[in-house]
Image (tube, rainbow, N blue to C red):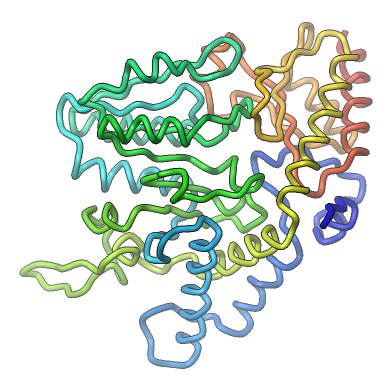
Length: 403
């Protein structure tokens, strides 16, 4: 199988509405193929009902679709059981769930949580909040000036008091891939649990949570060609079984009385209220669409786009790419000698080129690298070599205008 990005682009209605659009903000959110939009619409038109709670036919259809989506996610991650998959509103909620549920049960004063310097704020702040409640301490695993993880520092920080290691699979700000298999193995030897934020990884490479040794793995639907408002928490069955509920409400209980309440087993225990049923159905359609591609060809295509971009950037004066490591997600984070990233992005937008500027919700990382903000270019399956050419031409013109 090979990958034809021009044919794939035709599957995305957004590009029918904006045929000139060069969309290079995929690390923030991807566009949605027609099959995802159709799946959500089909659910609302033919099976819209609440799940698990009613005896009528529509509720049965809705429950079947929802639990079928859970099975799809479990296969996508190679979880050992669909019961290890919890639907959330996104990766952020999934991390907060683990921090509040697992953290409240397992952290005590003096315990430590190691968080890498690459992390999105969503994998920093929840740990700070639970640390403040429990007396635990959050410690940073530092990043070296070249954008790689300081492995020596990581190993020295892995002391007996470390209870959790929270790391990204790939940095959303500079793209660096972390050696998560190696880090997880070392953490487990030290007796710590591991949470991996896979939001920037799952759209670009196959993920096997059992092979990775992840205790918890999270991602958001909207970054993997799926809907907004849905995300995934994978947790090892034995860990989820010992965790208390984080939120209370319908569907997460076995029995409620004023004398006391007993809770449902996972995953229902962590899905209080009406879950994102239609969004889960849309996410399953997105994952099936993605798995229908040649994943090796997709990775090669995205690497080719990055190589074209890197070659073109070397010909433009006054541009620098943060992090030059080989193992990176298909994104580049740029800084300029004589221009502000926001000004450049505005000029690019005027040419129908969408990029992201700012700190990318990774302020500690950019502070450590000595920059106040960057312009980020990120690729997806539907991006083309022509997109790269248009971007490079527009960037050169923008920098000339701003000189």
